[in-house]
Image 1: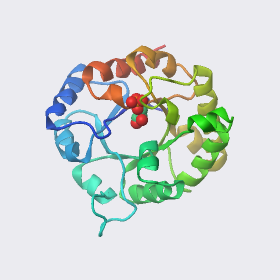
Image 2: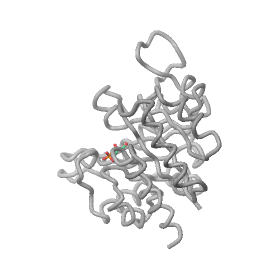
Image 3: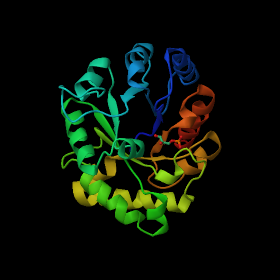
Image 4: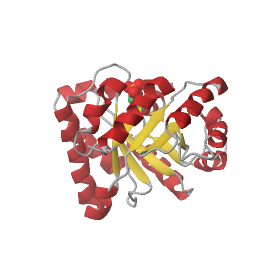
Length: 252
Ligand SMILES: O=C[C@H](O)COP(=O)(O)O
């Protein structure tokens, strides 16, 4: 049975004053029935780790360099994330792929580097609007899965986030059938490549304009094991209802 995961990606948002939101989340969900994770900007990782020391909330980085250290101004390595107390790292987010031209091959190298340091990875994949309109979604997903993931992964150390690029921060979402089709397809590809046991154990998150108002119906879709939430993860008022919807989804 895959444990559900509510993951928040703060992107380039938040200063130390916003750590107050995490206190509120911890207070609202003292003994969560699902995993909760927040990926703050790198400057807040250590503070958030200290803050969540007595709570299962996991803290993640938003990317990592393929190298352990060296002359890479402005970058952060998996070793540094681990040292700061992060347990996970998000890799291959479409904003990284676009803003920093990160390719599938780069994402795979980052994943190898992160796994080697004992970090768990959340690997993001997803099609653009043009690719969906050209009916190429599954082909794009297959290519990204094949090239972004290392050859050896487990359900324990790897999560996949399906994020249609056109749904991120736009208020638009695919239909529930479309989400289900892609998630079922990802599951079948994972089972094919890694074997049924591992393939079935990897959690699949949906990301792209998830809010309190649409979370419950998305969590009902087959092979959706949680969400990677951007804008609606920035405050407890917005994120808590999503966590609660995920908790409710395992009771129905
Ligand atoms: O990483 C999170 C996603 O990019 C989703 O962002 P969003 O919830 O603001 O659409």
